[in-house]
Length: 573
Image: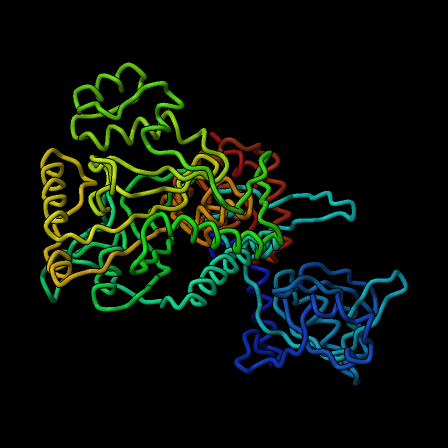
C-alpha cells in the first residue's frame, strides 16, 4: 500500500495492472484513427444518417449506466459529449466475454480515455447515440475526477467551483466545466481577428527579444535574471516598444507583435505578473489616426465574438462602434474632482493629493502625482470606451511633444469599465529630446522610483539614424478578452494564471503514529481513513475508528493482524 494515495487511486492502479495482466496496454502508442466528433454528430446526424454508419470517435468516460449484457456511457471529446451504447456480444463476439464483463464493467473508470467504433442511431427516448462495435482503451486515469452532476433542468450538483482549485488545476476545471472552454476559444478569436485586420493593412508580424539587457518601453519594475555565459544581468521585457521602433528605423512601414510581457509588481483582479499584449507601430501616422484605427479594430473584434459591436458586461452594454468619447487628462480630472491641476507644480500637487486623500510617497515626481490623482478619482467613472488624451510630458518619456499645447504630449489611453485597455502615442523621434527625457528618468530612479525607465543608448543611436513620424499602440489582450467575454478577473481568461506556492500538507512520518502505539502497518490505513496527523486521529471517536479499521481491513483485503479494541483505545490516551 502506498502512503498518500486515496482508496480510489489505489483501486485505479490495481485496475491498471490487471489490464496489463490481460495483455492490454493502458497507454497504447498507436495512432487512433478518429473520423468524427461529438458536435459534428449532434448537429448533422439527423440530416444525413447514412454518413454516420462507420464512426470512430474518442474521449473521456464521463458517466456510465452499467446493466446486464448492455450498458450506456457518455464520452466527452474536445467538442462536447456523446452517449454510447455497448452490448456485451458486440465488443466480445466470441466465447471470451472478458472485454465486456471484466474490462468495461470492472477495470474502466470515469475519466479514462477510450476510443470506439460503431454506427450512430437514435434511442427510443430520442437521444443520438453511438452503438459500439469496437472499444479501445487509450489512457487509464489514475486520479478520479470531481463528479459534477447536471440535471436536465440545469441544476448542478457538487460543482467544481473553488477558484483556487480551478486556476491551479485548469486541466481538471476544463474537463468537468467544459463551458469555460468558450472563454479561451473567444480569446483565440480575439487575437486571430486582430492579426487578420493588421495583416490586411500590410503590417508585418514580428518577434523581438524577451530577454533584454535594458528594461525599457514602459514605467514598470522588471524581473531580473543573470546569463552565466555572458556574465551579465538580463531583464524579462516589460515592453517590446523600443525594439519595434528600431524596426521602423530599419525601414518597415508597419510592424506588430503579440507577446508576453513581465512586470514584477502586484497581483489583483486585473494584473498578472506575466501578461499578453500587442504592440503595433505604423510609420507616417499620428495618435489622431491611431484613435480611428483602434475603433475600427475593436469593432471588428466585438463583431467576431458577438455578431454586434455591443458587448454585454454585467449591467452595462458597451458600444465598441466609434467614435469614442475624448477627454484630455487635465479635463478629466477637472470634470470628476473640480480641481484644475494643469498649472500646478510638484509642491502644489502634493498638497492636492493630501486634501483629496490620494496616497503618495517621496519618490513620485509631478507626472506620477497626476497619474495617482487620475487613477484614484477618475478611472472608475470611465465605463463606455473613452479616450483620455494629451498627457503631461513628465508622465510619458517616449511620446512626442504636443503640436499646440506646451507641456503636454500626444498620447491617449483607452479606458473601458474603469480600466486601461490601450495606450498610444505620436512617437518621439527627436533623438536629442529623447535623450533628455531618459536622463530625467534617471533622476527619478535616483530618488527611488523603481518604475523609472533606464537609459538605452542603443535605442538612442537608432533614433540618430532617423525614424520617420510614427504612431505606436499597445493593447492589453487579457483585459480586452475580459471585456469581450464578460469576466471580472484576469485569472478567468488565462489558462494558467500565476499562483502562490501550493500549500503543502504537513509531512507526517510513520514514527509519529508509532510513538502513540499505532503499529506501522496500520498507518497507511489510517491515512486512507482521513487521519493524516496524530492530532486528527486523537480528535476522532475511538469506537468508530476501531470499527472502521475492521471495515477497511476487509475492503482492502489486508493480510495483517487486527488490533484489539483496548489497543486502539490506548492510541487516544
